[in-house]
Length: 261
Image 1: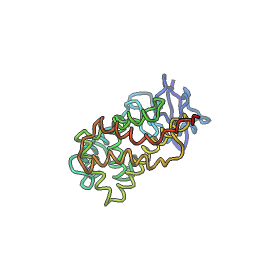
Image 2: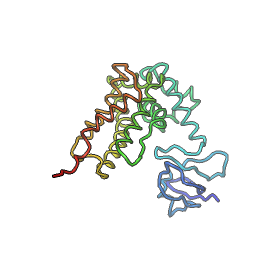
Image 3: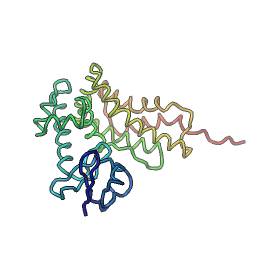
Image 4: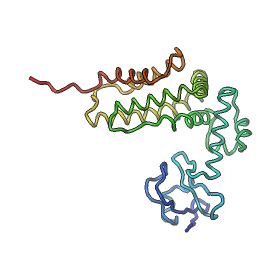
């Protein structure tokens, strides 16, 4: 049963989901009714009205503010990211314009700027939308196997012609475009390094990895090698390469066996 409440000058409401959904703003069950007392916990500015349902029904939202159930807001977001990805592939970042993205996605420019403050932010989210779902960071119980699986997935994604072409263009254009370079770091590189860092910390906590090495250098070794093949040498990005890369990178990072007399 939908409820309603006035908060921050507007009325909002919610229907409680029947099952947990990945990416909720808060990892706890939603109340059946949002009241003045509890609505602030769920951040009403990120509750997205659902089309075709009760006037005050609302959808669950993901951590970037997008809806998670196929509502008009989510469909608009997907259309915008898809249009941006197509234009990046066709004309590159420098020639891509927000006007063209809006026209191709049948969306308003204001809608785009509400979600993405700059063209670089939109471009990187478009790239991420095609990469992240295909190359997640796993948790298998072994840090080395986590990286092995993740690098295999990244290599497969980078080998797709459209991804290879788009990402190559973005990386090269970022060298002379500060906005794109910052968006690449903030929306792509840094979040992925944070996820990689979590794998390393789990490995250290389990005693699988030493604790005295430089994590940033390890990431440069692993992912720098992928980008070298992607951007410079053109050599194949296959399982043999990624498995050898992981084996050699982690060979010196395992704890020494106990001394035996």
